[in-house]
Amino acid sequence: MSRKPLYSEGSEREHLDLFAGCGGFTLGLSRSNLDVSTTRICEKDPKALKTLELRYPEIPKTPNDIKELSYAPKTTRKPWIITGGFPCQDISGANPFGKGLKGSRSGLWFEFKRIIQETQPEWVIIENSPNLRSKGLGTVLKDLREIGYLGVYTIIGGQHLGSPMPHKRERIWIVAHPMRSVWRFQPQGNPEVLGQGGESPEKTERSPLSDKTGRSGEGTETLAHSDSEGREGGLSGREIAWGQTLLGCIGRCLSELKGRRRVAPPSPYQHSWEPPRLKPRLDRSSSRISSRVDRLRQIGNSVIPDIPEAIGNAIHLMENNATT
Image 1 (cartoon, one colour):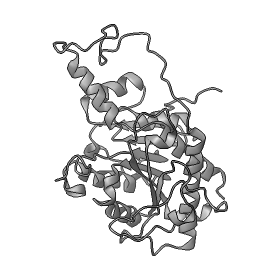
Image 2 (cartoon, one colour):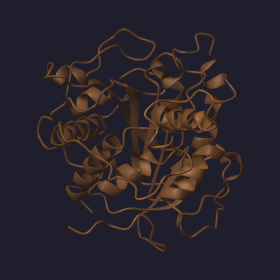
Image 3 (spheres, helix red, strand yellow):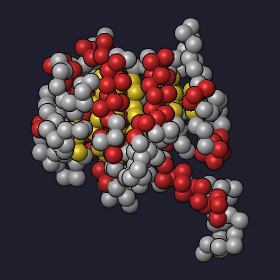
Image 4 (cartoon, one colour):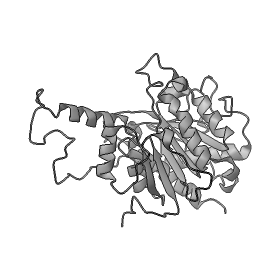
C-alpha cells in the first residue's frame, strides 16, 4: 500500500498543526485512513522547529508564533482539520500554583479559539493535561459552543494502546465539529465506548455517555460533551447521538491499534540532536548533554502518534457514514 504524501499543495482537505512540537499530530494523521495533507505547521520552540525542519522540510512553518498567524476573511484556502495541544504548564499537576487558562502559557487557548473561528474547519482535535477537567474544560467547551462547535472529550493514555507502550501518559482529547453539520451523522447502534466514566468537569454527576457501558479491559475513562455551563445537559438528542457515535468510533479504532508496535527505522546517519550512538555511557562532560535534554523534552511534550491516528480513523468512519 502506497503511503499518502505528507504535504500536497492545493490538497482538498488541508491540515493545520498548531503547537506542533516535534510533529506527533502530523505523523499520526499521515498514518490514518483520513485523506488529509498537512499544509502548515505552527511551532515557536526553536529546538522543536529544528526537528520539524528535519522531518518535514517541505511543510511551511511561518509564522511560528500563533499570535502572528491569521487567516484573512477573503482567504480562499482554509484548513479542513485543525489539531493542537496548547501549552499545559498552567494546567499540569506538576505546577500546583498554575492559573489554568488565566496563565500566560495555557491562556494561548484563546489564540487557538481565534484560529478556529477564523477558519471554520470541519474538525478540530485538541490535546492537553487531564487536569484541564478542573482547570478550564468548561471554558474550552463553552468557547467552542459560542463559535458554533460541539465537542466531546475522553481520557486516553499510552496504556490503552497495549503492552508495548512503556508509560501511561494519560491526556485529555477533545474532538469538535460544527453544530450546523451534526445532522449528517446517523448513530450506528450502541457505540463501543471504552471504559467506565468518571466525574464531570467541576461536578460529580455521572456522564450520560459513560453510563452506556461498563469497563472493558483497560478502557479509557470516557466523558461526555458539555453545555456552556460545563454540564452534560442542554443538548439535543441528535447532538448526544453524534457524541455517542463519535466516541464509539474512537473506541473501536483504538482497539484496532492496540498491541501494535511502531518501531521507527534506524536513520542512516548520526543526527546532530541525538547523543553519540557509539558511546555506551553518558559522559557528563560531553557538550551533547544539552542536545539530549532537548530531545527528551520534545519527546515528553509530544503526543503518542497512534492516538491521533486512531482519532483520524474514527473521523474517517464518521465521514464515510455521513449523509450529504
